Length: 156
Image 1 (cartoon, rainbow, N blue to C red):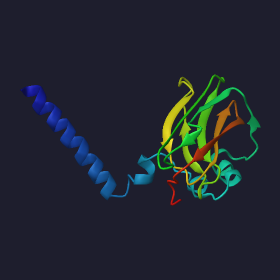
Image 2 (cartoon, rainbow, N blue to C red):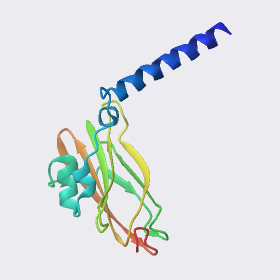
Image 3 (tube, one colour):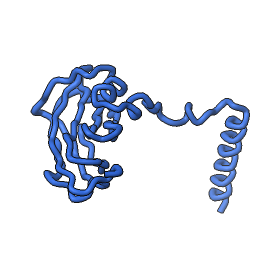
Image 4 (cartoon, one colour):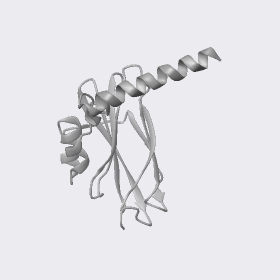
């Protein structure tokens, strides 16, 4: 019973300190949350999205990147995509849909001991290439797979 009281008091104290710091302006949401690459997610072209997320639009084609996605997606609102690679030193994986109004669908920064594997669902407005961009060893690599969309999920 005594340990529950101590845990409650510690939690209350931590919440109180965080509240005071936030109200004093010492702790802002931007400092707490991960950096959000607005320019990359707002980009209207694949090249601009790649520049925003990785600093360059030049990516070498690589057969080491595996994209698992359906050949035909019946509903563009939920297209399952899995990207994996066996490359060494993978820093990030980004997924783009070339004909979306905003091509960058997701971007993941990976730790050095993390397996280079990402699985998600993306929205696609129409038939397009799904592009996986992998940053490894400071260089950019990419692979593409066309996905045919029968019912658009991005207003299509």
